[in-house]
Image 1 (tube, rainbow over the protein chains, first blue to last red):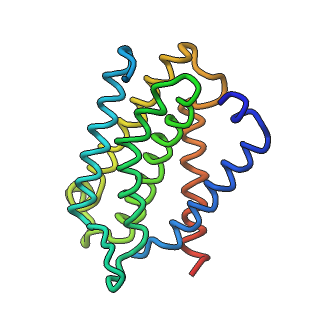
Image 2 (cartoon, rainbow over the protein chains, first blue to last red):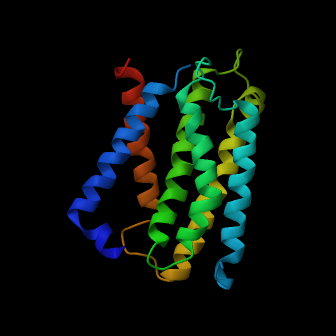
Image 3 (tube, rainbow over the protein chains, first blue to last red):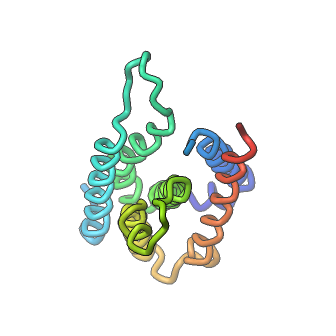
Length: 31
Length: 160
């Protein structure tokens, strides 16, 4: 896990997934 | 079996997740009827609740996987707080009064969500009694809360 967190690839995958998810959620949530 | 030292915080996370899952189920049940155009965003708390009850406890139980459980738990709190705050700000009671802010918004649900973040911190301190350096400090969570809020707002206002 330490390796996964410190590895650049894991870090980028995690952040890309987080950004995509938050963008899509903002798009979905209507009020 | 959940390790003895972590049974209290992990048990509390499971109970809070189950309670939140049931609250969401009563507020906006997820429909699997293809004819029902219910918002797919309703699936987020539905899946997050199941993960919080089943996956998070198991991930938090092992040193090798606890970071994944910790992030799943913490990020579900951040995402839930942002979404509920956005929905509350979009449907503020009119006229806006102090009483309205306290009882007419989802403030109570947002506050009830935060103990999960603190319980996750207890689990982290079990594995790393002195913390993990710059990672996963209160400042780290505040920073990520601000970033995710900004990205959520971008998705809301620019992606129509």
